[in-house]
Image (cartoon, rainbow, N blue to C red):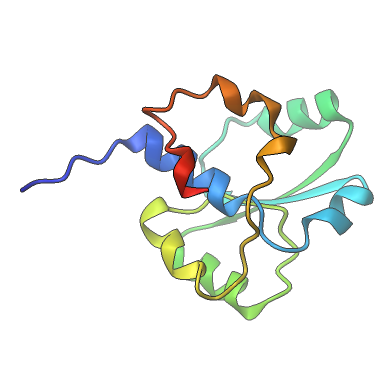
Length: 123
């Protein structure tokens, strides 16, 4: 039986699930958001627009493979607040204990997500 994977669901789930790497509160208190993402995943003006809108400095780091970001994360104290990771690979980070459980009460717009896209039971 062939399993159909929904790429949008995969992207949302992986981004949300890995967005809460331990260490985020200290960086945000300093007015800086440390983000890592796949190379060439956002528009050139995304960071500057985000910084203007939310009055925060973004330190943006890119990586080119799941193994590269896993090595940084598993080494500990990566300093990242937000990590965009492959949904197919994020599962191996859970047993390592480096992810925080999502506090859904801090994401009021989560109620606007279509349940068919985001299965909230995994959080």
